[in-house]
Length: 450
Image (cartoon, rainbow, N blue to C red; front, top):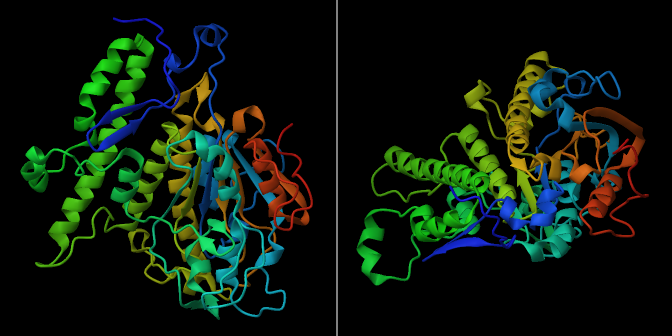
């Protein structure tokens, strides 16, 4: 077996006609000197995950501070990754409050979440938010990857019209903003996300294959097979195993995307357009999008991702967990114990899928540690109590170690109404995109490391 130490470019991709497959971090991508010292550099990545309508806070907030914090019912799914997560209490988004603008808290929640600004109340074309934290990161980190950023979600949105008390649907449908007037529309189709990451296997140059392509999708791995075989011969045994595991994971996700398309076709009446790639079951959709996120981070296809479980103010039902009522309607529970219980079920479902994603990053080896060690994954919302539309003491989690600059495994409580934008300032600094201020920030957030 080949044990040579060929040095490869970190930006190397496997290429085939119509496909370009980014590579995970391999030992061969670092110099022999660095390997001998045990110092295999890994880039820092950041993901932002948004959930709508707040949470049941007394089933979210730990009673104990510091290490050894407890896990209330909603956070129970984090048990296996508890030491990799910071629970941050006391943070607030003042600009998600009305501040004289009246109703529309859900739209403001979406528009303010990653921008930290008071969005303009309008349902017309004159929308105005701010440049979001992820897009500031993308201006610097994006030049080193195939995609500067990736924006995905599980619920289609609209970019115009009135979606919440006179606020444009653009605010409810997007958390990522490239400019104050230009939201980054999210992609909800897993097939399109896969194609953005690895290329579209159906888009090949050879006319000779046209008939075959019409009847059968080629796997992206089929298209890069020769390049992969050549690369494998140059790698040491450890990297060969990593390459094989990676290619297997790509194949598995691609197969799930294809199975979803086939299932959708079976469930549709004749002569109906096929909604390619979007699973009919919401739980399957969420899990597939999380898996694509993990793959994008693992391959360094992008270092900045935003993911919306659903739009701000979403009234989606969760029949797969026995909740038939709409999420937004339930959030105005007015103390009804049955509705509170159902909301807690929704919160628990979201956290279960998120915990699985965190575990997946933790289980991915990278540079003497794990992929999670080189990530910051923020999870939360700009509403805490959906019944009262409260924008203080927000439900915020931060997973990962940010290359050793964050010490997770703790519950930290900050002074009441500490700006969430202070956390964004600290994350920007760690991503080597420091700014003098962001939104309503008052400075860097302390206590992220000990």
